Length: 236
Image (cartoon, rainbow, N blue to C red; front, side, top):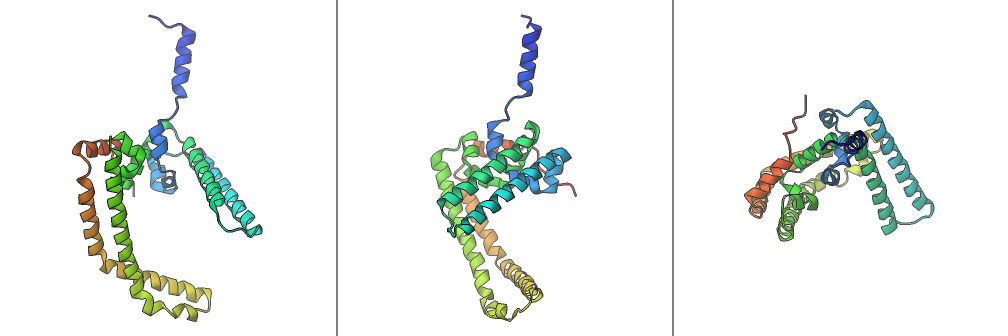
């Protein structure tokens, strides 16, 4: 059956302005767009970049205005402040993602899942997409929380190890230069302490990775891999 010209044109026009895939929209991490290699991978244009920067400036302006209003009223951060801050962030996210083409949005979603790794299954949208049940997600979520708590314990150990050395040094820092030097020295020592504990942290991550992997079927892992698309390899 031959379509009438006017109907054919209408169908082509409708397909040209099709809505982006809701899955891509929900999963893509817009904050990754601040990284130059990802902008390059997505072929973000200068015009798109300017729009994104404009949205970012508006977000910062509104955020400052909110903080200043609370300071002026001498109010403490409350649930309403958190709600408004989240609303501003959501508006920024939707605005920035709205600048991308469907292909760019899809690629950003793929890179988002790659960056998250296996932890991506904790996202309810990803979990639903690959058929992970609520009990599976809850079990993995509990294991992940336990692992994070233990990793934080290792970090706290490193910080505590530096207390004797830095406990009173801050009082002796008189100038900004002194404070900057002290902060730089602290960061170097902290990295050294964390390095000592790296084998424990790595072993802990491997242990929980194995535990979490057993909760998910091979077919579900395969579906997750398919959602990653081609491996993202930043250009030097």
